[in-house]
Length: 560
Image (cartoon, rainbow, N blue to C red; front, side, top):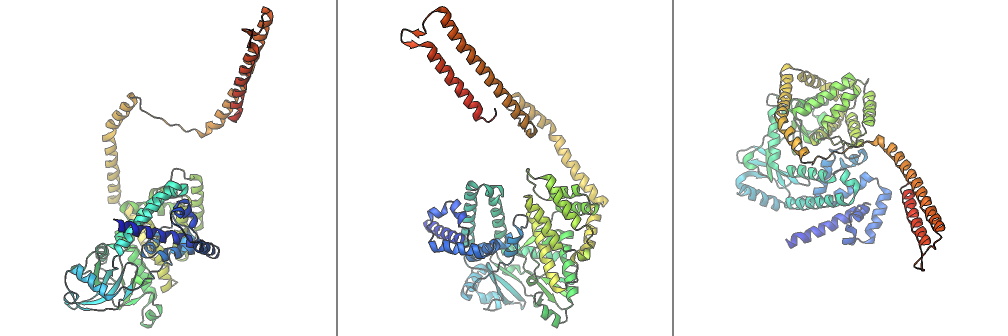
């Protein structure tokens, strides 16, 4: 336990140093961490230099890269959230690279033998020491099974789980601390975002989960001979090892090699678009990162997908919202567009509906007369998420992964052949989505779902009324009424009442004072009580003091 605390303290120091070094020391100061952990002056100097010479996005990217695997992966996952991160910072997050060193073959052997409970030689006929690729979480080696199949074995980096657990624990502590001390942090729900990113990262660390993703996508193309998904060898796979069929082809980022080997890049691009939109709109389960390095061209103009750590899911309900959004755009109905956006995300109560309508109108008019062949889906998605960001609309994670996937897809296809229009290729899928929306069977299912929901409401209605009346009888009903329009009227009434009070007090004071003086004069008696106390003078002093205090309170309220 003590060792864990010491490790945490050292890691806290690393994080505070990195924040300060890249010009974000003010955040640590607001959290009170600079007072707990002394930071050398040179770090502040470096921070000032960095802030003056680099953009915010560049400093965030460098900050994440310096802190290592956990922060790099979180940055990469965060790059899928354009609804909560400004565009200039997103541009830098997509540049994050896994600049990590290789771990030794002795470590590879140890991990494989621990996971397989057998020697490396018994499990594999051949296992190459030099890795094919390395990343922050693991590295991939080429191997041959005892049965002769060539495979790619992904091995998780040693002790990476404990490192990531420590970092995530610290990040969640910092998020909680920030929400308690900084107003805007709570408003942007930073702790919720950190928890969501942590959950995504832990899912990616589970190689069995990645294997299941691959098999699920493979079922989508079981009847399509032009799309290949590598086979998973479960008997050689665990949470820390994933063994899949080795794909020997040309990666799509090797454009010159594709051309030399006679591949038609336009055909490949169209196949990729068709495959991705089939996953998104037909099956609702799709590859979340289709960049050129994750797609391979095979002989016969075939394509193969790899790396299934990040996937997206579109529920039937969300597909219905997307259909509503498309229908509203086709009808040029801004109110329906706003309604569809509202149904897709979590719109805050304080949203400026009038301004939201105005922004959606501008977006709709911009793309109103643009032909599909000339429209950039990347720009459209970016602008839609920019509108959501401006109005603090939280878009569901899977929908932002969809946006990121479409952006990546457009970049991949554009490199293959700039004449390909993603929307033109995807148009048949969009039409099918709209037709499916109005199929009698689907409409009947939708009506039945609504009927059962309303049935539940009606069933619970008597109990709800009973509970409501019970609360009223006990006198525990609280009613809060907000009437902003009444504020000016109430303010004026308050001022009038204060002025009236002032006049009455002044009149009363005058009458009392005059009465005391006249009474004393008529009676012919002295105003001295017990030959020592001047009654009129004392009464006058007390009345004057009370009068001045009342006048002061009225003027202090600012409502005279």
